[in-house]
Length: 173
Image: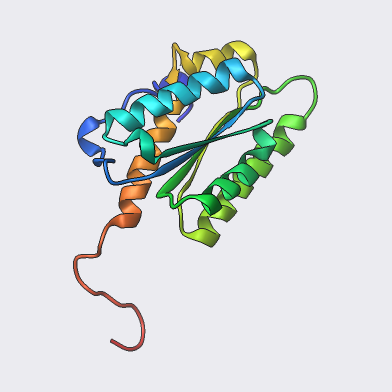
C-alpha cells in the first residue's frame, strides 16, 4: 500500500514483542541528512519504547544510501545483533540515478538477509520530491523510521521463536 494511503507511524502495539533482550544495529545515510536523521530519531524512540536498551543499540553513519548494505554488513560483523535497520532517502531528481541506487540497496539488503539469516531492514525512502520525503519523515504520512523499527522488532522476534513441535517435510523423521 502506498504511504499516501497509510500512516507509517501507525501500528498495533499489542503485536510488538518486548525488545529488552534484543540488540539492533542502525545504519543511517548522511545524504539528505534532514530526512535521514528524522527517520533515525523516530526509529530510536520506537525501539526504546518497546524495551530496547540504549546499550544494545549500535549506530553507524554512512555517506549515502548506496553505502547502506556495506555499512550494515560491517556493523553486523562487529556486533552480535538480532536485526539491522538501514535508513536512507533517495529523491528522484532529474536522472535515473534513483532507480540504480534503490535497486542496489534493496538487492544488497535482501542478499545479506538471505545469506546470514539475520533481518536487514529496508528503511529507505524513495520519494519523487523533497516535500514527499518530509511527509514520510514525521510529516502528514508519519515516519518511515517507526515502520522500520517495528519491522525489525517483529522480524527479530520471529527469528528467536522456537517451533512448538518438530515437523519435517519429505524423507526421514
